[in-house]
Length: 328
Image 1 (cartoon, rainbow, N blue to C red):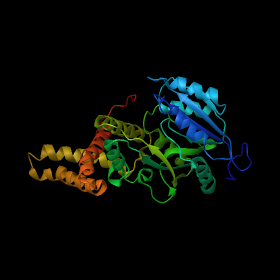
Image 2: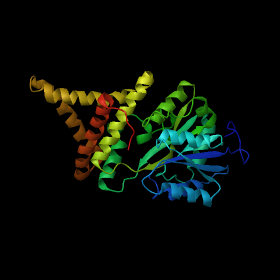
Image 3: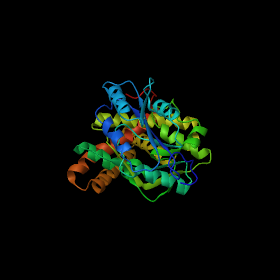
Image 4: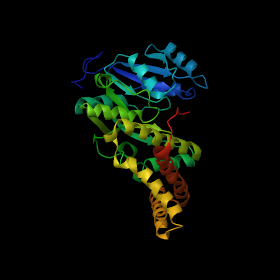
């Protein structure tokens, strides 16, 4: 930690936790409490960027700020995540910026471990595993799919692995000077803003570091329709980022679009030239095989046989033909 600016306790840089929140009234108090309970010797400030909500998120946030002088609130009238993150970052001063979602609960030791990793590695951003925490059988199946290589490719934050440099991480713990130098988050991006920021950080010479000791819970989508919309948006905004940064594309980003094209070509063209049917058939076999290996039971495997194609084909459709619009 010696190469990070000190603020407060000598040897421990101050930390600003920034939380973009929207429709988070039910879980916001618990999320903030988990931040304030962190065992970290440096100072911690929390800034809640409140977007227009259908519930009383604004009231809960105001009450939290009134009850603890470490908590502050800024407004996010645009209602989108990158705008909220930027507003909260600009409203804080600590040399380390920790991104946390309003529905996430940080485990004890998360901040201390992340700051230590920043100092130890010299990275500009560190992050860890996105840990699925489904509460229903369907959410559990989605979590298994997202944590598998067949579902998420080689993005290490989905499934873990050894620590080291990566192209992106989940959430992120940043050096403030590094993200300010590249202009913070791109507020035009509704999705994929984390990957795009990490691309610019790496282009500027910084290192983005994966540390499996860091882990934050994530609740997967609870319905097939919500999952399809989520991955359609992911694909759509990945294409937007690719247009701005063509070299940011990785092989895993092209698998879903090519799979969709292959399935469609086989289902349509196979009626004219039957050997083309092998493409959708091969994909179906791969889905079933992955579902059996990951699901480990017939019931879970059956759910995965629906979840995997929904993720892959929705992402591919979004990448190929999706129109960017504000996510609901």
